[in-house]
Image (cartoon, rainbow, N blue to C red; front, top):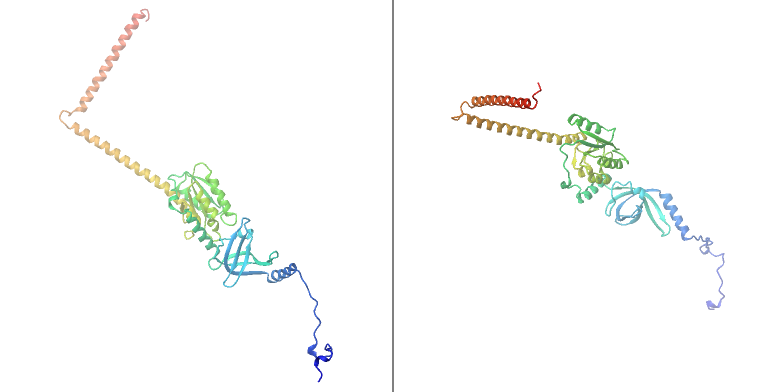
Amino acid sequence: MPDLFDEPFEEPSARGSARDVRPPAPQRRIVSVSQLTSMIRSLLEDQLGELWVEGEISNCRVWNTGHMYFTLRDGDSQIKAVMFRTAVRYLRFKPEDGLHVIARGRLNVYAPKGEYQITCEHMEPHGLGALQLAFEQLKKKLQAEGLFEAARKRPLPALPRKIGIVTSLDGAALRDIVKVLARRHPNAHLVIRPARVQGDDAAPEIIQGLRAIARVPGVDVIIVGRGGGSVEDLWAFNEERVARAIAACPVPVISAVGHETDVTIADFVADLRAPTPSAAAEMVVAAKDEFCSRIDRLHQRLHAVARSGVQRRRNALHGLTARRGFAGWQARVAMHGRRAAELAHHLRRAALRDIVKVLARRHPNAH
């Protein structure tokens, strides 16, 4: 039997079985790294569009540019994120590590590093509302600085002559304040600085109003506030810059925001909190009323002391006149008075005669 290797080796014919037939090799498509990154960007950015992502913030940093960089993570994964300055400015709370949030944004590919991240346009706390969280964060911060301490609160002036008011010209708050002061303290001089009390422009206008009135000579107290509304309507009085302006005001400030159940950061930093604008006006008048009441009480005490002193001296004089030897003293005083008057009359006549004699000797020819 011949050896297998003695036969010449031949390549199998193309006419072999179907399983031996191979398709032609496809043409290779070679792309660059940049092209691949661009393809990934198109897939992520164009097809996914806007997303809502829930996660916990970590590695949160705000750069000098105002942009905020952070990581969103859950138990298994994480994704880098950025929020640019224009969006950060509108946040109602301060993002911080460990805070569970829901962010709205779009995926972006950062080509130089081949990384993707979410660019956030909006963020809100998960669970607790953004406004409530912002309120609690700022309250805790300012309280730690001592701005709520009773020791730094200034008393209202006893007799305010100039009263400053920072509020809207169109609101009911101004009408209520003026009505109370016109009835209870008509001699007061009111210095009114109009300001918006709602919306994006409210905070800077309130601050400008406080500073402007504080520069007016002789202003004794300032009322700042507005009528009732929703949490969003009253939010200007929960902003940190407004709170610090109230705390820094050189004139005592009464905060009068909303209704009795409404509480704002301004209430904590002001020298006195009034439940309503009308109540603020009453508080100003109450100091004046207390001052006037003290004056009345002092007047009554002085009158009583004077009357008591006169009565004591009258009683002493009566006791003296009742003694032996003092009986009829009024008649004797009157008699001596008449005698003194007669002597004075005789002296005047004698002096006149002497003057006539002297003149006659010096001017004998004068008639």
